Length: 220
Length: 220
DNA sequence: CGCAACATTGAGGAGACTCAAATTTTGTGG
DNA sequence: CCACAAAATTTGAGTCTCCTCAATGTTGCG
Image 1 (spheres, rainbow over the protein chains, first blue to last red):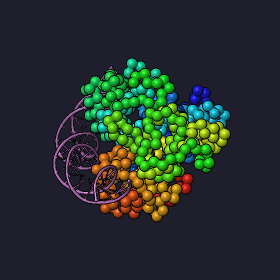
Image 2 (image 1 turned 135 degrees about the vertical axis):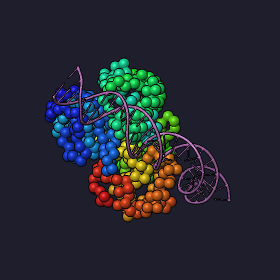
Image 3 (image 1 turned 135 degrees about the horizontal axis):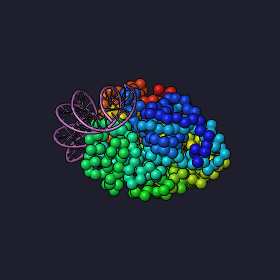
Image 4 (image 1 turned 90 degrees about the horizontal axis):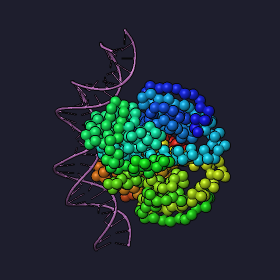
């Protein structure tokens, strides 16, 4: 549905920024293929990833209402993106109330995920944080058919995971070793496997309600 | 403007929950007077406050699009709230495109603040986290005239601050003593005073852009 | 005046960090 | 298909921020 709208451009990117904090905003990004993340930089140089995105995600729809970006977007691994001009978004919402509603809902769910991340970073230890994050990502991937049998392509590095969970890469590494030793997950190159859904959900005290997935929570 | 809409009810509350996670949603809350916060509970009982609210805030506008609440709302100290039925919200957005746009923008800014909080909790130490939080709250209060000369009524307890910053009350206490010793803030009962705006902004590496305040950032 | 909530203090422990180096994997070009 | 460089992962040792537990002041309110 989204792709039926006239998009501005399409491009492939290795691991580069797609949009930068502080830039004026004229269009939103649709992720066609690969992974991406949004992140903020603190003045001292450390990075906080605030969301991960997978194929089909309209990454920064909210930018349509803002003049300046408060965060950056970067590809993780290789990615394809399309650009949706804000003018198109507004024209569409003006014409179709249903789509306007859907866009608003998208923004609302975005906020719900941020709240859950806040709980994750603020109140869980490293083991729980990573378990929770893997639950979320695997479930979201599964909901678009990209995680059959608990296996998915997962180009996210341990440094990325550290920046998303508020930990250091070293500690992420040691914690993932525990997750593997406990037979909750395994990694083979860039492939991630969920070995024990139930255990992972418990380790991360994961409840998928906040994702508001249409097809529900088959795995939970 | 908002208060010209027909509201459902009004009530005063000591420190009780106004809305609970998991409840079905039929109306949104407008805070008329006092302070409130939104929070999530993790299964092990710890609490993460995800936002603070001050008079005039439409606290959970986003709930209009959701069937179930993913968080709770509680008053901090005494508070007055009005309830805005979702039906009224939808009728209004259907009739007035400008208000629909304003509502969506409200949701978008809400998300921007969550992203900044994620950076705060994930990437700053206790001293910076509290400094940043005080900057945000004082500036938001100032923008509605509730923090003249850097003084404001501030009924938020140290336990609340701990739940908002991902720290423990004990550590918040010790850190606030440092903020006071460094002459950045002072407290007198429930009154909070910003003694050194510049110092506080630097300590919290605070940049108010993410708040998208209409009247700008007089203090920064 | 007395209870309850809040703020403060102390001592000890643990999770996470820093720094630095080694090892493995990945990607690229010859 | 191999060699090399760059990136990512892994390991080790030592440190520090922040946490836990527990007790003691302090303030607000009925």
